[in-house]
Image (cartoon, rainbow, N blue to C red; front, side, top):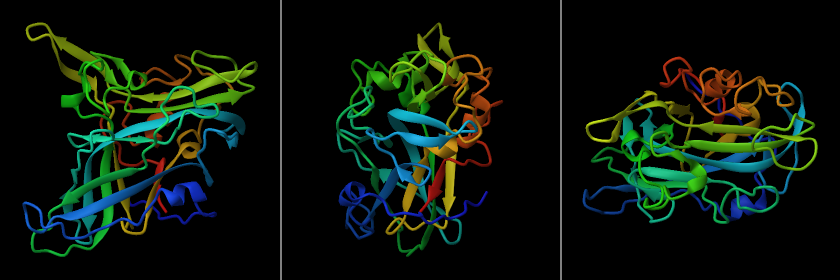
Length: 304
């Protein structure tokens, strides 16, 4: 499904702009001789307002709820640039020892200030890598990527894993693997729930995406498969990495939900098929609730 390109109603804050140098697409003359370096910019927003740990956001969900942020992190991988002919160009993600490793990138928008008590001080808003166009000069007009940790990296020991897979706050357990996305809110006036923060009259609304139904192979004592992978594929069109930003909009993710009342199960969506909130959250992140595979559309990501 083609994504509509929206232009922001207001500019990104100075703090984001200061950390957002122009993306590059230049010859590196590496091993292939024609590798081009690309920097994909991401921004976290709540509607048309930039995400911030010191903010209170209004008008969320069907109940127009007021909430404070607690966390905003997600993993992405299998990034592919798409040219004007529809050809895909896989991005070789640059290992940096902190945010990127083995084709995986952690995007982190919280800075452990304000009400964001779960995360870390450093932040990352970029995916950086190279692709080899050979002798072509492709005109990049789109991008695709998957939200989550690939299966071969998902069932490791967080205590010995290297960054960015060494964060216990983004880990469920060895068999279940990692939380592909963690977007947590403290909702004012909501019924208190597990994970809720913010004092009296606040309830937690948590978006924790990850694989479920993971089976242990008794012979090898390794995870052999997961019934529901729950990795959404995001496809965006009308995109130029040298000028555009990929926006992740929390307001769109919760647009169809009443945040003031938990419908059942874990507060928010913890990736359970029977959790009433997960149908809407999965659809917003491009995940088919029934199969755990990619859905045909999503509403959380857009180009600006």
